[in-house]
Length: 85
Image 1 (tube, rainbow, N blue to C red):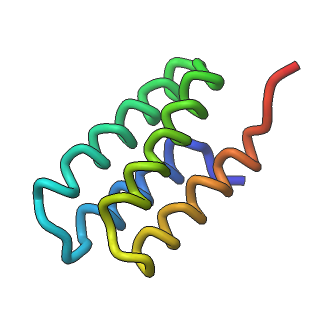
Image 2: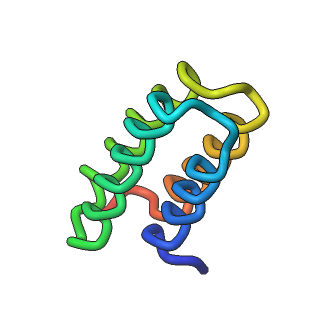
């Protein structure tokens, strides 16, 4: 199983390498990095909330094929992490 932080880095790389304007990529990358930092600190619920908010930005600012790929990574992270008891 891949760590959430590593999976988020994959999503960051997808966004960073995308053919999208810098003004669209920067806020998404910043949100992904904030979620990554939360997971690195062990703050799972805030990290998941940040990923959910990032998903909304992705849908609004990126083309469907790229947004679908990033949303899939986000969903895999959320599904793999689950909610702590």
